[in-house]
Image (cartoon, rainbow, N blue to C red; front, side, top):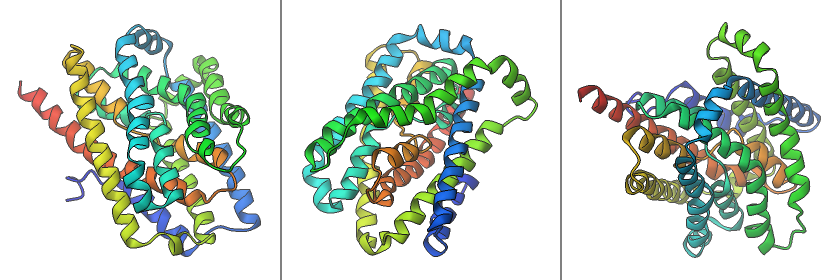
Amino acid sequence: MLKLLALDRFTISLFVMVILATFIPVHGQAASIFSSVTNIAIAILFFLHGAKLSREAIIEGVLHWKLHGVVFAITFAVFPILGLLSKPIVEPLLGEQLYWGFLFMCFLPSTVQSSIAFTSVAKGNVAAAVCSASFSNLVGMFITPVLVSLFIFGQSQHDYDPTSSIIEIGLLLLVPFIMGQLLRPYMFPLMQKVPGIVKAFDQGTILLVVYGAFSSAVVAGLWHQVSGLTLLYLTLICSVLLTAIMLLSLYIPKWCGFNREDQIAVFFCGSKKTLASGVPMAQILFAGQPLGMIVLPIMIFHQIQLMVCGVLANHWSKQQEQQ
């Protein structure tokens, strides 16, 4: 059953982090130290991502501008539009702060690791997926704060300037990525000697971030504010959103005349949202807000997308082998 639902060790570890934060949250001075350690880990992670991405993949991917345009439109236009249109239904069910988290999730860029991995398993255009997912994350560092400013804080009483947040996000995520690209000739040969180091560090960093975010949320009374019925509503809403996006990501590239490999790349890059970049962005963009309420939607959506994409990638891989 676990294999069928694609519940790997990382997915289970995320649930363990939430449980651990619920019963043994980090707080006080320890929380401040933990936050600094987490930020260092995030910077190292994006440095490794920069060192791993080849210049050839970037050039090859950039040339496929039509595919990237479709992924960009789904990620930063279709997702936000659906999130905004759903407000009359979603906000009464979830409350304002959880709806903020749901809308923030719609504003996030695509994933990198899982988009590439699922595209590879399903035998899609991996080079295009590498470039599209990476481009989505880089552009998202600038677009996501602007969307948050316009559609979340722009309608609230908060005085919010996206410029400072973009600078902070750039320093935390973009600068290490660029440094990794510059030092790739020296770093990549070392990384090849330790296969899977980026994936392991990626997952470990996310676990640290989730534990820290939920610790602060639990200390602030998260589980007294979110009922079991609200969690059920949130899970159903995320499932409906993912279904709608996946259908669009499946049929739009067909309507555009893409071949099978490109259709798969668009599907896996366009239908997902990043947890790795999302939680660090939330820490910066929603400083002083109940962070646990903000990141809870992306955590739930992330688990659902991994399970569904895992099943679909294996199904399409078997289809291709039978042809």
